[in-house]
Image 1 (cartoon, rainbow, N blue to C red):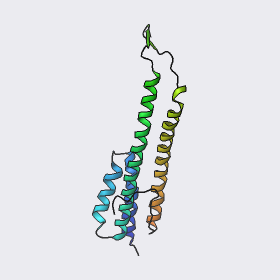
Image 2: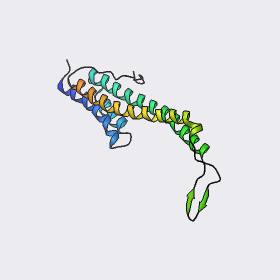
Image 3: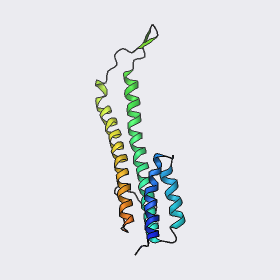
Image 4: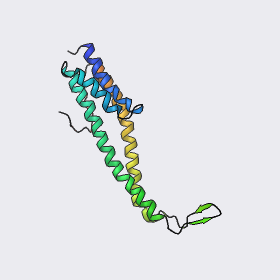
Length: 151
C-alpha cells in the first residue's frame, strides 16, 4: 500500500513532464529531479519515474524519426519545383512553373509524418493526464508505445 506522499511524488513526476510547454527540456529535467530524490525511498515512485522518463525518451525518438522523414521531403520538393530562372520585375519576385504534380507522393508522405507528429503530441498530453490520475489513485500505469530505455 502506497502512502499519500508516495502517490503525490509519483503523480508530480508525471505532471512535471508538462513543463515542456514552458521550459525547454523541462519534460526531462523536472521528472529526473523528482525521481532521483525519491527513487531510493519508494518502489512505487521509482516505477513511475522510469515510466515517465521512458515515455518521454520514446516520444523524442519517434519525433526525431518523423522530422527526419518530413524535413528532407519538403526541402527536396521545394527545390525540385523552384526553377532557377526566377524573375525579378519591378522589385517583385516572380517564380515561373511552380508545380507539385511530380512530387505528390513525396508530399503525401511528408504531410502524413507531420500529421502523425501532431497526433503523438495530442496523445502525449492526454496520456500524461491519465497517468497522473491513475497514479494518484495508487495504480501502476504503463504508457503505450514506450521503449524501456531505463530498466
